[in-house]
Image (tube, rainbow, N blue to C red; front, side):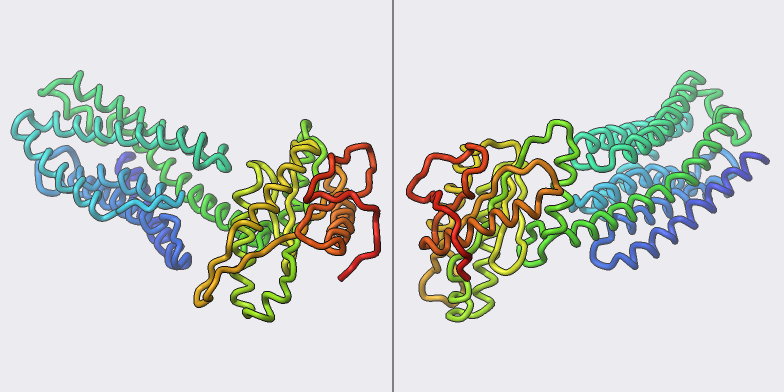
Length: 412
């Protein structure tokens, strides 16, 4: 009686959350984050337990074959849904149908060749292997594509590991019981089965809300990322740069940073001559060049109009000088190809560099220093790198593209 109540509760949980997952997926429109696949997994497992209640115990029938097939297909659906959640474009219907057809045929062969105990043992063993594969995937995800969800992934690994262990224990009990008395271990009111149903009911209660939490977490992160990036170039905007600097300088090993203000020379002329769509193409080209030129860990952003910004982290003045020159030369040498234009465009930039600064609170001061250097560079002829006045003896050796002239009034 207790087992029947537990399985009934389990069916209710699975089917209700299946509907909830499906409704959530409908609200997510284009990017469903695997919620529709999770809904299918819950539906498959819920239907399997409904069939188990209808059977009343171990039996050999079409209902039993369908029950086992649905039970095994459910974790496959969960695994595919998890891959979709993390942005992996995996097929769904073909592998699901392949698993269903293959396992249904395998059940018939094992039942005829080895008997009913072997068929039930096969279900437990295959379920244990599938859940083990899910645990391994979660652990791998913690180290690679799900580093931002470390605590959540460890929690999921522990829960999935529990059902893996229970299925492995059921498999061993069936094997140890042998061909004659093995089915007695599967009676619904047996102690082991009660523990199994209690754990599954707990899992069905805890996991679905946890998955909803993950979706909300991912949506919140995406909204925060959208708010921190320029929509045209996908580079960081001022807000994103400030937040990234705060994270960096909160580190104990943070070194002073340098700020490079990069301005496209004569950009207004480009817009007036070729039109704003071509101007947008130039800005996107600039963003791509910045991404390719900066070092891993440096910050690149667009702060408005034709002005871009690079923040060099963990570098000295010579590394900054090398980066600035590489960036200036890359933009000068890479043509901008635009649709409908007879000839590609060639652009240049002027770069103003700040003195090193040692905190997010000094970001605005560094901006003003780099801005003053930028306008001096424009006044001196453009297509050059301009450094601030010598503050702490950190000025690099002057080169053809690097100026150390004294401050002058800004030239617009």
